Amino acid sequence: MTPREPFQLGARPTLSRATVQRDETARKDDARLDRLWKAGQVLLVDAKGRTPVRAGGTELVLRPAALIADTRPPEAMLLGEEGDTAYWALSAVEPIGDHAVAPPANAWGMWPGARSESGEEWHDLRGIGALLDDTDAGLFTTAVGLANWHSRASFCAKCGAPVERTAVGWATHCTGCGREEYPRTDPAVICLVHDGADQVLLARQPIWPADRYSVLAGFVETGESLEACVEREIAEEVGVQVSDIRYLGSQPWPFPRSIMIGFSATADPSEPFVLADGEIEEARWVSRDEIQRALAAGGQVDGLILPGETSIARQMIAGWAL
Figure 1: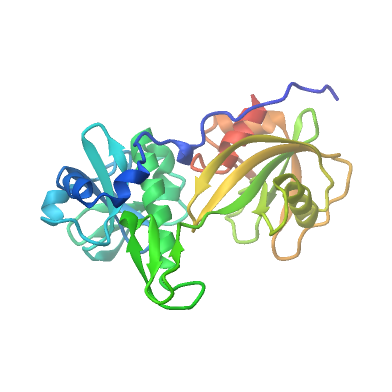
Figure 2: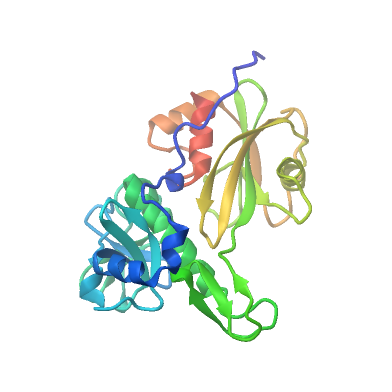
């Protein structure tokens, strides 16, 4: 077994890309916000986290804010600014029909898109995130994250009274006790476990399509460090002890409101698996050669389907396989 040099991510995680500038001071400046609305572009997001895209799914369909409303709607969420353009997000106002459409070519699609009554194709972030450029990927990620938070935070966590949006979507104010709340992000670790040489540990959940495998992940518990979470999650899910834990990178994962914090670690491939009942259906050590063949074939070969490029897991695996 020949030790290899430490590896890095194969590329910047798809959903970590962004180009627009966030400015907290702008969020509370009504006069400035009104100007930004008039010169803004709007991203619509439906209740299932889908947005309209152009043919091929490589570009978002943005709408001029002035065509949606003359004045800034109170529910409009400011995503950021780039040059002279401000970008906003709103919940979809036009109904999405039941006309299912297949994901675009090269999309990591586990769920179909939909065709709206006006004929547009709407797809979700998991499916098309990797197809978008940096600006669109960052806008869609932020919009979905904010929309998911608001859909789950309509009432005060302290007194139970309804809340109202403030700071153009970046905070809420309780109508009862006055408590201010900010968007929640739940930390989760995701770890590529390898043997220090040419094998990587992959596993699959029972609900996944046949032959789809990924690295292991789990949520950080209260009072737990990230490294301790890595050790616990790997032991709980596959019964393996890890060492040499090393940080790789991170990626927002707004499904509904997480950030995936990537690590690598080493383990002994001779150690027997003890799979978490109901969570892990199968775990296996996979050779570097097989991973490289799958990557060269676009992400899958017979018996092995790698995570889609929207997930940081794909970049972790690609970086290790180089």
